[in-house]
Image (cartoon, rainbow, N blue to C red):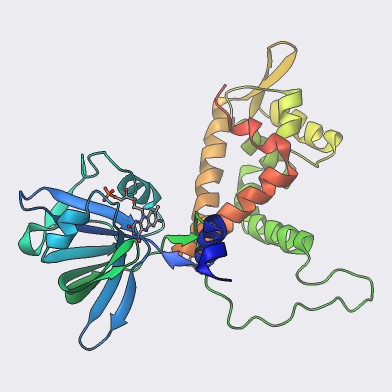
Length: 322
Ligand SMILES: Cc1cc2nc3c(=O)[nH]c(=O)nc-3n(C[C@H](O)[C@H](O)[C@H](O)COP(=O)(O)O)c2cc1C
C-alpha cells in the first residue's frame, strides 16, 4: 500500500476502525465571540507536564480563530450529548444559540453537562498535512461520573465494560441441550426472574401474569381492537390472552366498546391498577439497573430494542399514537 494507490474512502474506513470518545473544543475570537467544533482527534500526550493534543482541518471555518487563540477548552461528551455533538459538527450555524455556558480563562466558553473538561493554553502548533495539530498545556480540568459518547466506524456508539469474571458459557448436563449463552435462555430466564419479583404486587391486585400482560398492553393506547391486542401480545396463544381479557372485563378492569367491531379499553379501576403496577415495575427496573452503569444500561436497552425490531414487526405499531 502506498499513497499513490490509496482509496480515500477505504483509508477513512480504516481510520474509523479506531474507536474514540467525542469532544467539543471551544475558544473565543478576538471579538469575544464563542467558537467551537466537534473533534475526535483529541488525545493525551504527557502526564507531567500535563499536555493534550487534537487536530483541526485546514478547511475549518474556525481555523483562524484557533490559530490565534491562547486558550481553548476540550469537553469530553457524555452519552446523552449526541445532539450537541451533531450541532458542533455543522458548519455555518450559530452553534451556541440558546446554549448555557460559563466563561473560562480569556473568556473561552465552557459547556455544561460534559464528562470531563480540560482548559488548555496552546503550547505548540504543527502542520500535519491537511490538518493543524494543537498541543496544549492543561491548566485546569474537572470531571464527573457519566457514560461516555463513543464514535466508531462513522457512527455514535455505546461503551460497555467487559465482565472480568466472565468464564466460558456452560453447556447443559445433557448433550444436545441448550448452553448458558443461548439467547432464548438469557431472555426467557431474565423475563421470568424480572416479573417474578412483581408477583406479590400482582397478587395484591388479584391478577395473574397473563392478566397483567393484557392490562399493561391495554394501557398503551386509549382503545384496542382484538387484532391490535394480538399484535401487542406476540407469541402468546390467543385463547390464553382472550381468557385473561374476559376475566379483566368481568371483574371491571376493562370495558368492551364498539369500534369497527369489538374493541377494549381500561376502566377507571383498570387504569389506576395499571398505574400502581407500572410504578412498581419501574422501581424494580431502577433496582435491577443499579448493577450497571449508565452506558451499560443504555447499551443493553438499545440492543434489546434492535433485537425486537429484528424479530417482532408488530412491536413498533403498538406504540404509535393513533
Ligand atoms: C464525531 C466527529 C469528530 C470530528 N472530529 C474532527 C476533528 O478531530 N478535527 C476536525 O477538524 N474536524 C472534526 N470533525 C468535523 C468538524 O466537527 C466539522 O467539520 C465542523 O463543522 C468544523 O467546524 P467549523 O468549520 O465551524 O470550524 C468531526 C466531526 C464529528 C461528527
